[in-house]
Image (cartoon, rainbow, N blue to C red; front, side):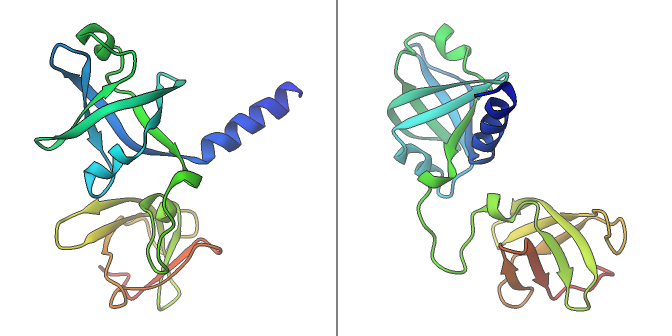
Length: 185
């Protein structure tokens, strides 16, 4: 395998990974770590027995031995991490999972990672931008749509994820979301 092929394979495998959470700090004196989970509910992260951690461009696999909800996050015991000093070395590490390991969703349900980067157009055919992120507000999720090449204007928009009242259609194959949303909002 040439260097170019190796680099391409690494890039392709990175594209198949999604970030499910992040190790934030040390918890206690026995090597436990505090974890912020991006899953909903947050405890879903604990269902995966092996995690891929990425910190400062380096990745490694590590087994989760135990974990539970604690306050607004999770606390987790990882294999081979037995002291606060060991745990501190993992602070800031992203917890990754291959997309193929995620549960299959029902039709009409989407992972946030599937929506990020999709173009958003209104019913008048105006390109409003691309989804840059999503916000969880309690009442409903919100698409953060930022201007992109070809956008109607340069405005950032917050569009509620309300199907079918606002979000009319999501087409992953064409990377397009159609919304009933006035460009002046």
